[in-house]
Amino acid sequence: MHGFERMRREMVERQLCPRGISDPRVLEAMRRVPRHLFVPENIRSSAYDDCALPIGEDQTISQPYMVAAMTELLRLKGDEKVLEIGTGSGYQAAVLAELCRKVRTVERIEALSRRAQEAAREAGYQNIEFIVGDGTEGYAGAAPYDGIIVTAACPSIPQPLLEQLKDGGRLVLPVGERYQQVLTVATRQGKKTRLEESILCVFVPLLGKFGWKD
Image 1: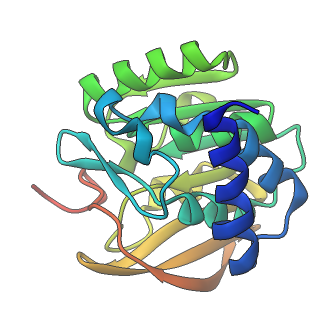
Image 2: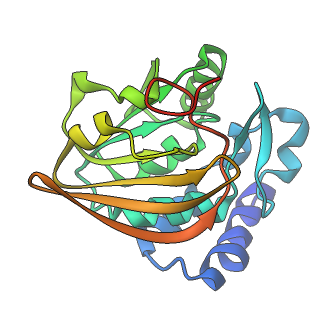
């Protein structure tokens, strides 16, 4: 077993399973996605550590547990169309690509989007579309979505994202203050939205028209 493969398996066994991640498809995706390809080369030896890591542009790649927890909350079965807001490193998009039919991911920083696309290509993913733009507005061109995931902190739930969900679709995002949020699931039920709160978390702020201002 190669070193990085062993590190991925240890990540799942030591970080994810003991904390309650139980969806077998999510666990297998976390075993498969080469996280080290999505971090800068000089910190690849730390790619599977139990923490967030810097990726440049004042952004981070999320802690493996947080990626798994958010992914599990989407409850993906395999044929869904998913929108990600906040491409960052591209790692979360790759995990989603293992679990659904098509991923579209929006990033406001062009350099990050470009590097994420290169990493995804190196890892062999062909079902991810990379978009540069204001993620708080979603991506209406391919709506509606079965699931939407936001990997940055929101002061409130951006209305365009709710509008771009299919009936029964799930939106997973951190909502709260700038330096502490609650992982929240918004499920669209006709014209109504059902909200569920999960764990406390800390993400970089989501900047844009329906997010935080610079």
